[in-house]
Image (cartoon, rainbow, N blue to C red; front, side, top):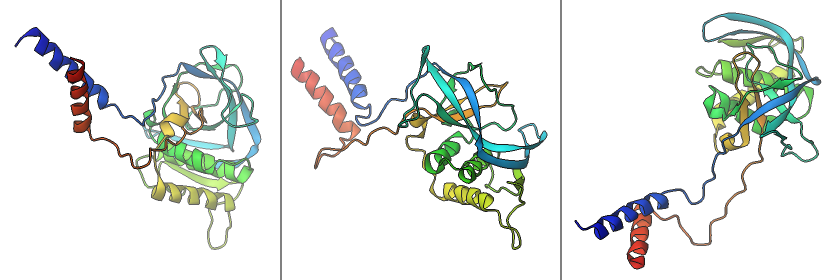
Length: 255
């Protein structure tokens, strides 16, 4: 086989590989980010008593507040502005690690990872994306629902049993025929919706999770959703084989 023919075939293979790259996708960026100046937003939460077990089956009993935090995010030594309007540069954050203490203030110098890199992370991101509102009942319900997804990631979601469960929320026990607990009921609603309607689309693009072995991990919304890309009227997506043939044809014309 002469060298010109070999070169043509090589160029054809390279062109075919390039044509296989999705034309309407988006790239998930690689960040060198970290959280900084974390603040505790006590007013937005409610009291919670919970019991949980980590992967080593060690039992934890926690009484505190199911609450959100805010944090600065730094990328390449520049403080990032939040995607939400009028929020300045403070990002809303929720705990995805009930087994560590939160670090308040100072610098939490850990890289941020995509939710898919953390067990239950995509489910936590879905809950954040669909349910976050600035009111104490919603914030508390969302936080305990997120804890449920990251601790009981391999089980059916249930706030009364499993590796993570609640004993009291806002000072009230589990709802029953005689007990009303609206926050708990809201968390159950979120988890039932997640079980039925979970969709991971765009979540690895929008959200990041701080990952560290010594401090509490947080999930934040780092980006707005990517803009919808409208297809040209009547234009379909070429099949891979068609795109390869097109690439070979263009190289042939160039030759």
